[in-house]
Amino acid sequence: MNFPSSLPARAVIREVGLRDGLQSIRTLVPTAHKIEWVRAAHAAGQREIEVGSFVPPRLLPQLADTAEVLAFAKTLPGLRASVLVPNLKGAERAIAQGADLMILPLSASHAHSLANLRKTPDEVVAELARIRAARDAAGSSCLIEGGVGTAFGCTIQGEVKPAEVLRLMQALLDAGADRVSLADTVGWADPAAVARLCEQALRLAGERFCCGHFHDTRGLALANVHAALQQGVARFDASLAGIGGCPHAPGASGNATTEDLAFMLESMGIDTGLDLEALLALRRQVAGWIEGEPTHGSLWRAGLPSTFARRAAR
Amino acid sequence: MNFPSSLPARAVIREVGLRDGLQSIRTLVPTAHKIEWVRAAHAAGQREIEVGSFVPPRLLPQLADTAEVLAFAKTLPGLRASVLVPNLKGAERAIAQGADLMILPLSASHAHSLANLRKTPDEVVAELARIRAARDAAGSSCLIEGGVGTAFGCTIQGEVKPAEVLRLMQALLDAGADRVSLADTVGWADPAAVARLCEQALRLAGERFCCGHFHDTRGLALANVHAALQQGVARFDASLAGIGGCPHAPGASGNATTEDLAFMLESMGIDTGLDLEALLALRRQVAGWIEGEPTHGSLWRAGLPSTFARRAAR
Image (tube, rainbow over all chains, first blue to last red; front, side, top):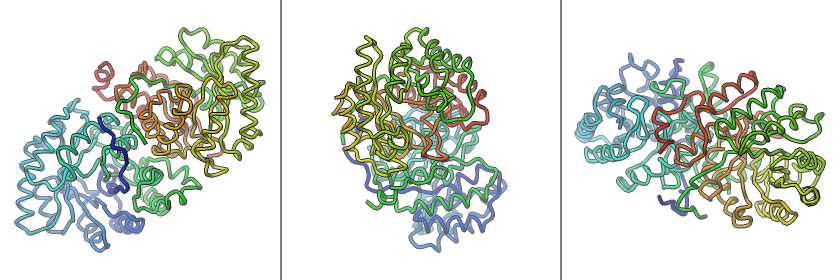
């Protein structure tokens, strides 16, 4: 395993709290609050936000207003608004509504794929090819990201072989994905496994391997980000207040926490473009909207070190 | 900054919950429970335990029974029982009671040193020389560790210069310390700073730089451990259920969590000698004894991955 001698100078935190976070909790956050969240996140410097998911509202009523949130996000300068799409039907909505990026999740675990998506992984690859054809036919510039989930193991199936993860990543690219990403859906990854798989994914996909998505189920999300950073990965999904989870990991805590991750990166001298005080203020606001739901993270409680501003400005 | 091409094959987690943890909470844990904790931790594979502190009982009534806990710990085969000593007087007790190792804390922050220890850092170095003379005069084999705290910054003073940390580390060695360690007392360290300082400490002290002590105040403890591991550090302080804190970091969460850290290391293929199921059982027991006190960590909630035993046995 190789460690490059320098870390990335910049990294992007893609906010997924509005999708991965809100879909995992019972509280229905009103559209006006979601719009305020997107507005304030953009004001705090976030430039990539997953605003929701184009799934049938009866499955995820929490995200039924995705089109409205997306429409607002599109009014903000420099913001790349993405949505999750489970299939061609969702992708057609993403294209019609002008999303900048759509993410098609694929589960490298056959068992998880059948349980969650009712398709085999290779059927999802075929769906991506149809999405690519539809996108091109529409003359849309919406990017297509194939997100390979359960990439480090699966609660249902157990072990997931790296070779299968990489095979599916290649298949997604061959089917027309513009980009691919890796997700530790159930929180089984460790820094050594992350370093190994990211190194291989970068060798396979180069810059088209664009993002790491690490759940904090067992407390390793930031250590895993650190391992991925050292391989050259410079975009990470994270969720404000760490909200989120996985239906197949009961009691599990959520995503990497946006504000803690931003603190780590900025402390390391890696530019995120984020205003951490503004993020912490937004975190307080969001935590208020979802009072009673589990939230995570540590920075909000401890606050920023007194020397932090100076260090971030360095 | 260099990253060695391989991680350590083995790492030691030194349990500090009985000292750093219990001194930070209000609950007085009875001696019988502490003894049960030491017994079960040893049974789970822990071979280095900080059992308490020889400070005046009026200052830390929680640790007034350190001599009794130490006496029990000494009955367990292969266990290295350590104590914290704030000064010569405490060291004399540690020597008389037959501790295997005593840790003299020094604060690299001048302001923190005056506030916490009522001595300058260099006065602590002089105290270590007196402790060394007393140890040698007694013909004791008790190891002396100089623990350099606030090594990554300080809530009172702000910035702490790495050059000052290294100067004090050298001074401790020159004064007769057998070993030295680094502590991020207030949770300001980040993986880049940890990598830099550990690399320099190893260059200065070689194998006599023996341990990293990372607080999880801002969620970075395990990422910081990962960075230190990559430099070759292979011993870490941690606290079961993450209990602990710092009087100068209000609201701060505690130490690196023993069970989460053990999970990370074992997942990475680094042998800790620990039985994680037994540690989780002990965690439940300890959490019951200190009910109402803040505890931390994630593994206890999510449980071990189903493939874990197989991976650990690999």
